Image 1 (spheres, one colour):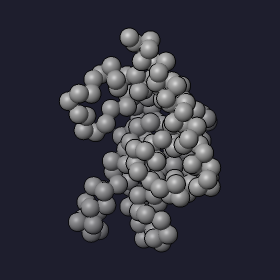
Image 2 (spheres, one colour; image 1 turned 90 degrees about the vertical axis):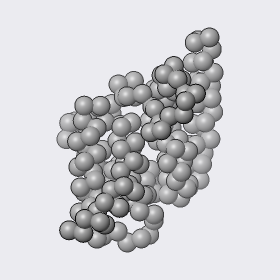
Image 3 (cartoon, rainbow, N blue to C red; image 1 turned 120 degrees about the horizontal axis):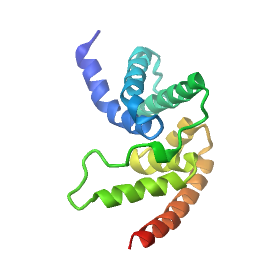
Image 4 (tube, rainbow, N blue to C red; image 1 turned 90 degrees about the horizontal axis):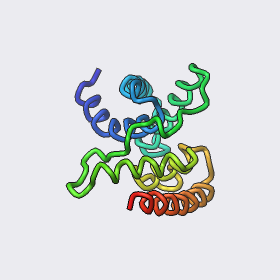
Length: 165
């Protein structure tokens, strides 16, 4: 095992995989599932053909593993309101706990596919084509979904922040 290569791969992919899992798996199991996914990525690295970015390829593996997690438990999904708050890895000083809770509440109102497209396109920075690969959609469908997700997020955000004031 090439420890240096493992370290670089882990450092590059872990944050994106962890954020993906954190939004979809119950908090008590997030770390275990993420570790399983990282192990699967490492074992499968030899099959990476370079047809997409390494990050896109890793997120496809993560998506399959999360689906498998729920198949094993015979659950369709975990409601977003059961998920941890959406706090960035490096929060800025002006971010408050109230804002993080408001964002979590807004995401809980959106359909799962809209949350996913926002995560992939806006948080992870994947292209429409890369997002389409992960979500098994066409790039045009991703763009349409992102447009609707932004509109719905904006409306829900206005409702959430109006009720706080």
